[in-house]
Image 1 (cartoon, rainbow over the protein chains, first blue to last red):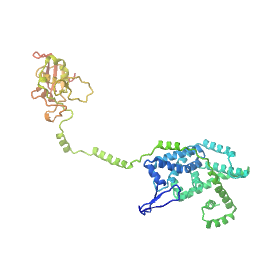
Image 2: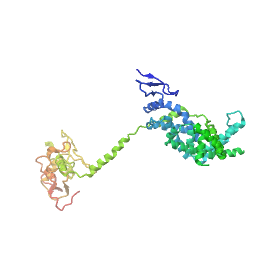
Image 3: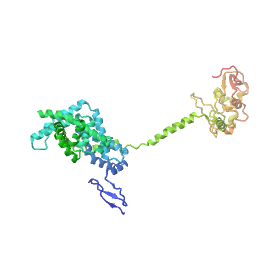
Image 4: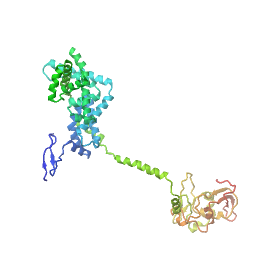
Length: 218
Length: 265
């Protein structure tokens, strides 16, 4: 074969790429798209590689949305079940993680709608009651306490926000996604995504300012 | 503070403004206390947000996830294009039922039809069965005459089997094929009597025997006047209780259907 082998990606998971007959199109056998293609044809091990690769990402996002490990794990499971069921609907022009996060976003939004106010209060109370048990990152105990209080207030404010605001804060400021990807996940334009992020940040500041002000008084 | 300025402050705090412009805006907002306070709030928010990344490890087992995924299965891709045929099929069906049919074509098809479904004819019976046996057959005479259906026999003629079954709900008794010939004898004599049998299911007069369905019917005997009378839809056979002197069988009379008689059992 006159083609040569070369690496076309920086992803260490993607080890092999082949250029056939000088073609500029390279196909990585470990790429998400290739794995999706194999999974569509019935190769479940290919999908196993996909969920091992992206499970942590989905769990992190779900935990930020749900603030409860059990709920987050349920969301992860349901997200991968739906992803596998609907592999036929996945279009290759979008990244697999973008499509996956879109599923997770919808699931989290549905869950937020279904959850009652009482459950939210219970979660907030449980988070607050366990604050004293958390271990700080720095050696200074005063700084640790202050950091914990800020984190608790931030978590409380984030949980109290509407799901659509929470989603964009997590995507942009915690997961550090690009605006173009956020736009794809939310199904809107890039300008629309920027506007949503801006509004969400302002809403978060409005919610956390009273909490921090009260804590500073203490 | 204007909302537009606050938007710029948010962008500045979160590092989404180019460096060249960021320095100029920073100096501008530092001179304004309200803007400086807002900027510091958002910068603090930006600095605190990574604290939320401290999340506990998940405890999802791979086996649990695998089982759940496999239980859900892979959905088969649907052929949505098939639904586009539905309106076309519906339109074709409606046209088929709504459009008037060509009467000449209908006439031609009628001529070419070999026999209507309700046609009843008689199978040709072996010679020994066409003879009348009054001692054995008289008991079943009423049933035979009332029945408008014929029964044939198999090839060896040992046992008669029903050759035609009509879709009647009423249960019918078994009648041997020899009774066709007993009707021949009854047709020649008799008076007004007990039972009246309308011959509504007889074969049409213009129906050739060769075109009759072979599994159901056969041509009537050539010398059988009773069968000929039964083929005539205008005739009614009346069976009497009185016995004939010469044969000992019940008497029967062929009457016109316009007579003032009660039809039925």
